[in-house]
Each structure stands twice: as C-alpha cells, then as structure tokens.
Length: 141
Image (tube, rainbow, N blue to C red; front, top):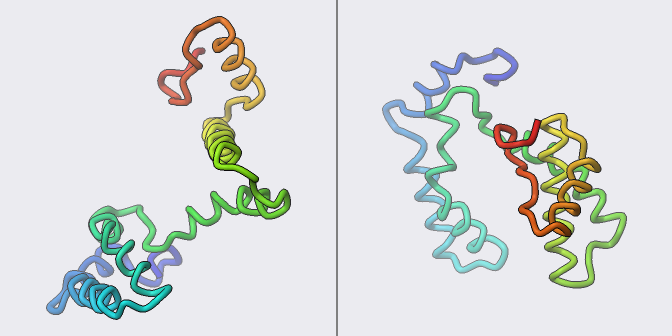
C-alpha cells in the first residue's frame, strides 16, 4: 500500500501506533500460538517472537518494506540452484555452498567481478595472506 502510493508512510505509522496499537495484539497472538504446542505452528511463533524487535522495524524506519519480498527475490536464484543440484550431501558441502553464494551475491551487488575476487582469494591463501575483503570500503582498488 505504501509502495504503490495508496497510503503515505506517515499515515501508515499513525495507524500502526494508533489508539489500539497492533504490536501487542500480534505479539499476544504469537504467544498463544507458542502455548498451543502445535507442530508446525508453535515453533514458528516462537521463532518470530525471538526476533520481535526486528519484526517492527518497518514501522519506525521509513524505507523498510513491511514484507520480506525483497529478501525472497534476493534468495530466489540460490533456492532454484539448490533445487536443481539436489542440495549437498554433507554439512561441509552445505557450508561451502552458503559461503560461496554469499560471496557471489555480495560481489555482484557491489558490481565487482566474482571470478577475479575468488582468484585473488586463492592466491592470498596460497601466499599465506588474508583473503581480500568483501566489504566495499575495504576492497582493494
């Protein structure tokens, strides 16, 4: 609603913090979900409550979407890759896949060359030096 202009961010924040704020209502329902001890529900409710501060960030900070659509779009390629290759056969393989995907995605978002970075990282390891930084401000020019 905010993104398509149907509601201003200010009006949205006012509604979220109005006379009967929605935050305690939602958190109360999540707590009831935990107490249900229902498989597939209670654990999810507990996970959400564990991150309840982050859950409401979009209310106080303009520019943060109230959905996880952006995150889902960011992960879609990796999810499809994992599905096509049937995942990994070991914990070590899963860690490698997660790490290489993080590196590749981070570099692409910074418009840096993935293969060049990986080559530099391998050379640094072989020479006993630390890997190049993934942080844009610390990256070698």
